[in-house]
Every structure is written in structure tokens, then in C-alpha cells.
Length: 473
Image (cartoon, rainbow, N blue to C red; front, side, top):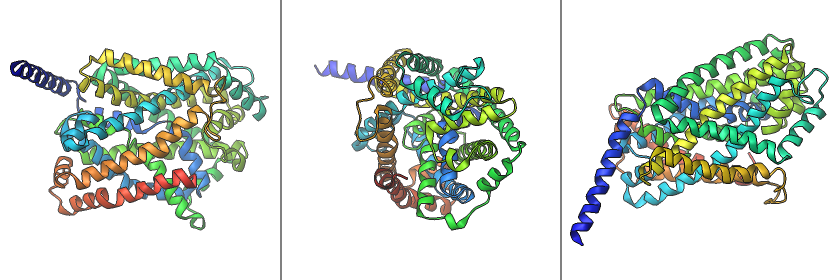
């Protein structure tokens, strides 16, 4: 019996060693691949519809200024924390927390729930983006054309999302694309995709921004987005900016820990985190300079920007494109931009789950991808049908998709981030992560990092949790 146990233990340890060695060879090839992949995770749908809406809601330039300052003094530290945990342990999220402190292996399992909840409904919305890109390409009746009204575009969107089979078909296309990229692995799949899509994202975004800013009346939108109105500054502005920063940078989703585990030791975490934050913030800012000036030039900003999320992107912006010169072409380009951003984010969510199944479940990557795809199909189908035949399933005023979104973004992600900070700040040697990140040679930076992680971050994230649950910020 003893010999049998020893053989099992030896086989298990050999398997872990083999997996770790494989992981070293299949990680990101260098800093560029890591930064582009991590930035791709951060740049997503939230940058394209949530950030511009919050800029409009919380005072334009004063919100942007608050966001930038929080990104510098708060966001970068949290990015460094999660990347540092991943690279120091060299493991996916379950193994990472177990390696930091064996008492917290359970927390790794809890963390995996976050991307598992998010990615199915994210793929549903990604399917909507595919539908709209295709509709602008073919010039769909009731959506594209100078004679199309707000009522038409609203009816088009409503008819699409409440139908049964069409949203499911486009959801399936998006989900298959996401999982197919992850099947090819870190270098051939995620890194190669990021090296193509992220530069393409930047080029398309800058082109659209320049095009919109050249339209008559757009300058008023630029003034609103750039010039701070400090009379509108308040507690809600800071909380709104903090919440957007938290969700935008993929904090509390397991992603940065997973990607950090693929990061080479000679790549600077400090500079990489700064570059990710800059790329993410710049993209959100450019998105605002596309959407807000366009709406100021061709729509009623007080009406259009008062409606966040799906209404802003799929109804209000569609109306703007119909009024723009060469609007159909601009619409095609815009939804391709959104599609690229959505794919880079959904890929990172899937990878964070697949990494756990490969490492802790000892599965082949293809098998793990099939299992994740199955989970996406089940939960995503519920989210898709929640706007139609399952519309009667509600908690309060929230349908299935909104319930998943609220659970993940307003409850689980803040809780995960708080516990991560508590574990890193109070239950491991305070010098381990600063040394991994490269802050040990500068005592002031190391002390600043520890203060942020131990005290400031948990308090701020607790405020996000409170505001999300009770203040609707």
C-alpha cells in the first residue's frame, strides 16, 4: 500500500514538473507578446460603451481626469500585484494561491467562478456585434440607410435579441472563434492573435476618431470630453471612475494571474503594467473621442448618452452612422473594431479557465477547451434566450444576462480583488511580491506598493462593492 502511494505521488509530481516545463516553453515569447495579450484582455466592450457613457454621466473632462489619476496611483499597483502572483508561482489561479499559502487553495476555486460566469454572456453580446457588422456589410433593411429612424433601429435591435434562433447562431459563431484561438495555445493562438488584432484596433480607432473629429459640430463633444467642469466633481465621480478602472483592467478575473504565469522572468512587470494601463486608458479615451463628438454632431447628446450599454451601441450609434457621410462604411469599420476588442477579451477569459483545467485537472488543452465550450453553450444559451422565450425568469427587473452581469461585476469581482489584496498584504512575506515585481531596489516604491495593497486597495474596492450593490453607480 505504501509503495502504491509513493508511486502515485511520484507520478503526480512528475506530471506537475512536466506541465511546468511545458508551460515555460509555451509561454509568451517576450515582453511585446505579453503586453499586447494583456492589453487585449483589458481593452473590450467596457471601453467602447461603458467609458463614454460614464464620461457623459459624470461631467466629461473631470471624469477623465479622475480616471487617469486613479489609473496611475491605484490601477497599476493592482495590475502588478496579479501579474506578480502569476509569475512568482508560475501557476494558474488555483495553484497560485495554494503556492502563496496552502490555507487559501479554496480561494483559487472561487476565483475561477468569475470568468466562468462572465464569458458565456460576453459571447452572447459578442454575437450581437457579429450580427451588426454583418448587417452593415449587407445593408440590412430597417438598420442601415439615411431614411432609418430611431424607432426603426430600436425595433430592429429588439426584434433580433428577442428572437430565438438568430441570436443563438451568432453567439455560436463568436464562441467558436474564441475557443478556436485558445485551442492553438499561448504562442500560436493568443500571442499571434494579439500581435495582429491589437495594432489593427489602434489603427481603426485612430482612423475613426480623426474622421469623426472632422465632422461639423464635433468640436463641442471634444470640449465636453476634454475640459474638466469641477462643479460636477463629487464622490460619485470618483466612485464611477474607480469602478470603471477596476472592470476595464481585468482585475479580479484570474486573467492577469494566468497571463503572469506565462511571463518570462527577464520581462519587467513594472513597465509592462504601466504599458497595459496606458494602452487601456488611451483606447477608452479614443473611444470617447469617437462616440461623444459623433453624437454631439449628429444626435441629441442629452438623450443619446443617457442610455448606457446596448442601447448606446446598437441603437444610438447606429442612428449616428446613418447620418454620417459614408456612414455605412464607417458602421462596418466601427463594428469590426468592436468585434476585435470583444474577441481579445473573451479569449483571455477562456484561457484563464482552460489553464486551470490543464494544470489542476491534468487535461490536454483540446479537451479542456471542449469542456469550456460546453459550459459556454449551456450558460450562454440561457443568457441569449433570456431576452426571448425565457424573459419571464427574472430577479427584480433583471433578466438572465443582466443577472449574470450583476453577479460577476458588482459582487464577485470586488470580493475576489479584496481577498487577493488581503492574502498578498497580510498572509505572505511582504517582500516576496515587491521583489518579483522589481520594487525591492527602491524602498519608497516597495513601501508605497505595500500600503496600496494592504490598506488603500481593499478600502477602495469595498467602496466599489458598496456602490454597486446599493448606490447603482
